[in-house]
Length: 176
Image: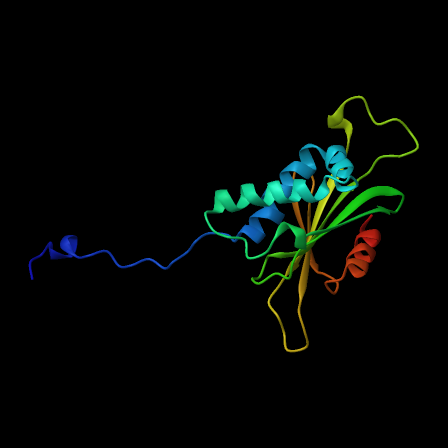
């Protein structure tokens, strides 16, 4: 073996890391970007008959970007338009997450007065995007993490509630 034979060695195989799952990308990137850029439009779509086709098109784009199947259909994504502390909100319930950091559900909260006209400048609309994520499970059941974003930053609120729409909404109402 010569002094520079290490340069001729075959590279060691790298682990098969396909990157983040489509489930993760859908919740943490695709929907979040739309929610924070166009919150009023997203709320309108969520309350419309076009909500299912919108989610289907968005998931299709994510699958194409990720280069692998999502493992679920867009029809499994459930939308729950509601009011949270008098503000318009939509909770997006995802299929059961398989990996840590995938979302059980997300919420888009827009802090506007629905009785008044919307601000003329869309940049004056304040929106928040929340996720309830799967964490490392313990013997006593699943653990969750509550996180959120606004246009400037990501916030980690620590341990979240049980992964139900009701518990998620209650946890968010306590934050506002």
